[in-house]
Length: 389
Ligand code: PLP
Image 1 (cartoon, rainbow, N blue to C red):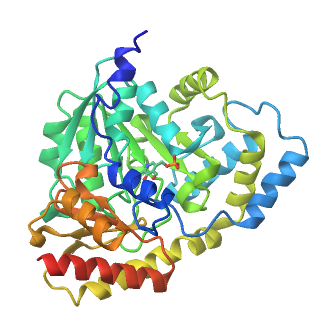
Image 2 (tube, helix red, strand yellow):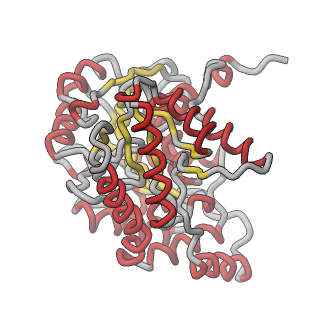
């Protein structure tokens, strides 16, 4: 029996950009020690107090089917948090709780696009963007930015890339680049969205990890809330990647359609996980800062080390949990460099090419080791790149 064209088309028989990651995992499974700086996962686990809240919730009976749109208390907390941050009226009817931000990305595209509609996104991009778009049967339009412009899309790039499109997916703070979109970039996105009549799908899963520049959600710009879908998650902000707890925020009519979708796909998020989410959000800003602080510290350590390596460039990190190293002086592309680095030094980093063509000749390094280990490993990467330059 043959599977559907739609599902065959998700990866199109091609690569999903994760070869280095799988190669590193294979080495680890065979007993080789590898330092992994290839994934967006904290070097700490979920806080024991949150796990305890999860356990208590399960013991207290939240193990049955939970409300599909999400427990009202959690939806209200998410809505109020958004209202506080943006000043834009948000109620629980604007919120659906999803199994992680990834599921919200899928739901947003399902809700916004018909079969074969064109969905735009910005290169470099988080690895699942093109495959999410193909999963819903839409076609892609890729807006390729430039390292020279620190990967901020220009008005012209946005406009020409969305002329035929129905949606535009953006991500700030950005994975992989660590760039936070400027006020001008966000204004351009909103202007183009109105001009070309687009849904803006704004992936804000790194919104608590900002070191410079201010995070501006397009939803808070005038007349944008009716055409903006915001993807959020506790994965990065609360070190809860494995709990699979995220959300989608948008106009209540489209959220009610996303609830129809959830009823037929995920059937909601386990109640004990949602209660842990309530507990986690109630811990407030201070806790979010505690989780994000180490990445701020380590990006500073990385920038400091780079002063000793004038041949290596980098994109000044403004947020998220990564630094993009420009290794073009080695004459290698990111893929060959990452393979050589893994083979020689047993350090796994992500080639820029895993995130599209704009980031080729770069590697993304996760800031996810304790400070001392990070400094040592980052210096080894720089020495390795320098020896090839
Ligand atoms: N969006 C971006 C930009 C990401 O980097 C990730 C995960 O790394 C996700 C979405 C998915 O996150 P979640 O764990 O909430 O599904």
